[in-house]
Length: 416
Ligand code: LLP
Image (cartoon, rainbow, N blue to C red; front, top):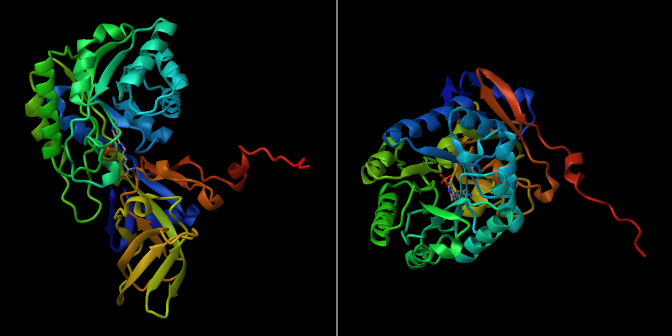
């Protein structure tokens, strides 16, 4: 369920016509629905209610301050992966004891920053990282909570680039190493190893891989006798982009909760995409329509791979819809951006009634890993982020300007 839908051939975001919004704001822009964000968060809260989990929204999916603030105000914590995300999390007043920090490459300054701010836990991904956290903690006189991120070697059916829980991937610690760490806990006397973390991948549309990974970890906890205060099962709940059959929050919970009920540790979840993915669209305008001699139709639009990278990087499918449905003979189009790369496309071989210049299109399900993966490639300012909140459009991030493009540069002119 989301708040984007057609009323008499016009696409609406909540009760506002996207066509009307497009008259007031230059394209491309991201448009989010506050109601949908909150609805999806509430769905996870309700489905896992029995476990009273800490739900740490994964900021990498969408780190817009307003969106994160809305979720934190509703009780969410945040899952971060960098000093920058920690900075943003603190900026919006997220209580540090609701922040969990994963990443295979935490730097010493980032670790120090997080230690000083007293985050809930570090999700540790290797022995050298554990040594680093232990060392910095000793220097600062702290004793942080850490969780070992286990790589359970479970395959989830998703794109190879976003599969993380198999043994050939860079993420996490294998069971044998984790056991050695628990057996030698006194070597790391400046940390409290009290949690286990898992994250097997993203856009997983089945429940089985989660159950498999959790079962493996439960076996491990039992066999190793590790004294655990919390189990963080990561994110990864998939959504519908096109024809896939994703699970509802209840279906995910239905498989997971029975495995964990009654266990003496707290459950942490790190959903990202499930909360924001279907809560946002990218609105773009057709600049030109070009038909090649071979009969191929290209609709060249004003959004490119710098604005939404997923189709180019993963071959990801996003529905692309006209914001006003026009009837007519259906033709196939490649929807491509203005960037100088053949990989710059938003969709291929899509059916549309004749497209023409100045028509607006909506790239659907762009709320997760959309703006956060945007770049300035080809010196293109990044687009605005708008959100419908309480029936009104709010600019929650203005579009970048040409001036923003050079803001960090220092022009050196004294060449010899
Ligand atoms: N926790 C950890 C440790 C993660 O690495 C991730 C995502 C999440 C939670 C949230 O996963 P989610 O619930 O959103 O699936 N750029 C890719 C997705 C990369 C996901 C990286 N990690 C994409 O556009 O599909």
